[in-house]
Image 1: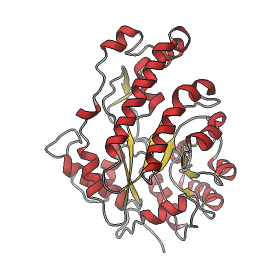
Image 2: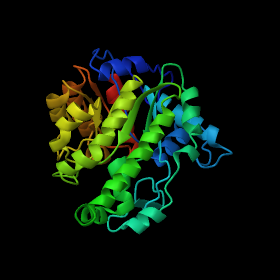
Image 3: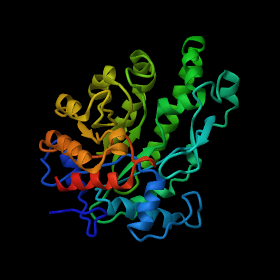
Image 4: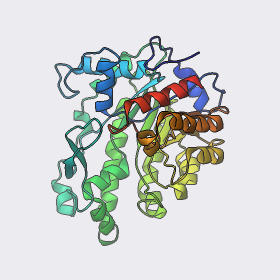
Length: 362
């Protein structure tokens, strides 16, 4: 079978996908996954390859359903067995911005403040307008859950995790100082953010066709965790454990995306938090094939095509690289091919399609 992406006749099978990543069956065809796909990529493929009419944005209530139909159609036609979707309940951090020079520029690229954030004191904490989960609009999740093509599942997430949101609100530098200068404030921050995200998931578990929480929370950089393992074990991992327990109580998987070198807490994530799968890999930290050899007996391994490779390799070299991953990781199950991080707007669309073709045709 020679798949060409986008697919003309997709045949998603979420039950098969779940069995494969749980280690209950060996794949008889290629299995692909993804964490995030930038809107600029989806826009270009949707209009030029799928023949869809691009409409407004998710925030525009007049076209929201049409937008979400296009969103679902994209995941369906690209060969995925699930749709992943995330929104943030309303944490508003201080933002930095710069001109976006990507292949498909969005004009301005934004990122969270790494210096001092919005909350630096108890006064800031008390005056901050904390989002109310009961006021959050869950209708996009409800719409997706009810409108999936036959055979597809729904993977849900809160936009950014516990550490990411606390760090965004306080700033990386601000949080680092506060851990020593004002530990009670830090504890209150993690408690407040952690509870809000837990409330979010409590509100979402009853939506149709959810098979997994696929939460992101970047906890590392190139050589180590962003904060000491002890701090992560005290402030961050207990919340992920609660989210995982909630997912498991409802027969859902708990999958974690976390960038950087988090080797020092992998045993904690597997044995204590009880994640079902790990995503986000960088070759200069640990290639996915090496991670697979060490951990695939315990959890699913997701993605793995290094972003630098995906953005820069020419076709022949890229195909050889991807096939080397598939040869090691696909044949024994508990693996799905995808990017090591996400399909960013600086990745050539041709390379994205090559990755999917190789995965589906393996």
